Image 1 (cartoon, rainbow, N blue to C red):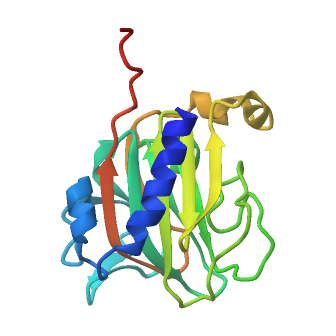
Image 2 (tube, rainbow, N blue to C red):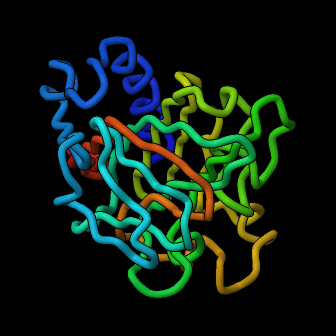
Image 3 (cartoon, helix red, strand yellow):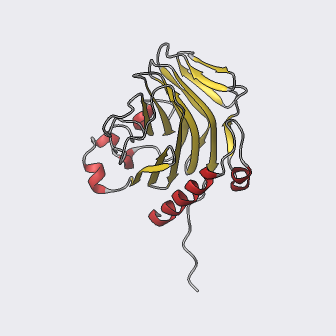
Length: 226
């Protein structure tokens, strides 16, 4: 599974080079099976959880930062490649949820990939592109507040990879015992949902998203014995 994930990382980096303009799938992505989760027109594929701070403005999904909550996908996903672009306000705080459940804290029932206004700060378990409170990125590549960033999240079984602005900064096995030993029992990765919603967070800061698209993956199967 680890080698399958690394192969997807390499393929993803090549695909980013031929990505199309914002809010449009490139020919490469169409051939690979990507579909839009947000097309720049409406929030038809999303459900507001918490305060109604979300709107579509000039093709961009905008969170005003009023109140708290999150916006979740209508559909659930297990193994996938998720691509999006975001920009955050100065000192802002947000995130992308994956495999999240409708009840409970989506950062821990599933996972949160952190988004912060933390350009030029040291990487840590709460910095941009971290798996929140658990896995730090190898380097913090977040751009200055107000600039657009690209993020790609790949989940395949227990493997996770996160690329920020074209460079892989997280590649981990969520079933790793040493990794899970650092976490409280109820938030160990093997106790979290294996299938769930995609979400974006309202953490009281203005944040914007665009070009959100996803490709469902099928786990690699071992070849049959000859």
